[in-house]
Length: 83
Image 1 (spheres, one colour):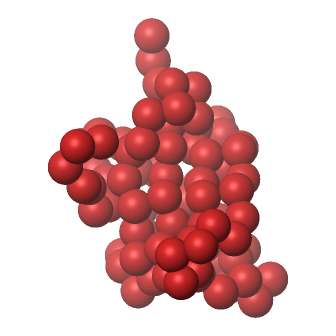
Image 2 (tube, one colour):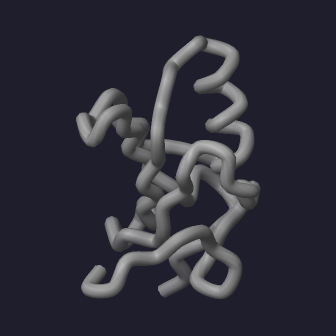
């Protein structure tokens, strides 16, 4: 089963000061999503990225990181052990 189909592959949880601010289930481009957050003046410290179809945690990005448009298991952001 292919997890990435290039259409709304991600779900994203947005955090500020270690508190969950926003969850978006259908995200096409992670980079464009962060631009949308900026446009809407939604402050965040880090975002947690999930593979939407499998609900598996993929990675997280801190504000200021270089953010990939379409991260996958080869090209992804920061990873914690134990996920």
